[in-house]
Image 1 (cartoon, one colour):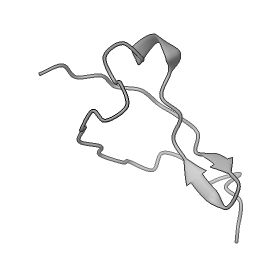
Image 2 (cartoon, helix red, strand yellow; image 1 turned 30 degrees about the horizontal axis):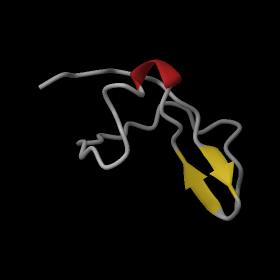
Image 3 (cartoon, rainbow, N blue to C red; image 1 turned 135 degrees about the horizontal axis):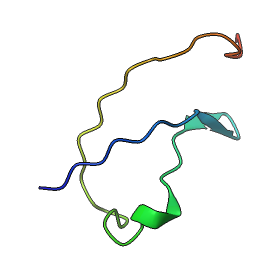
Length: 50
């Protein structure tokens, strides 16, 4: 099992909020790969209110 720690800003794609995986990881994290994702909110400042 490999572990990666990345810090990302949530992006918007249409009406969806998404997390974009860095290109450097595309060989390891191919479409269909199952991952465990733990989310820790670091900063609420600047977040869009809906």
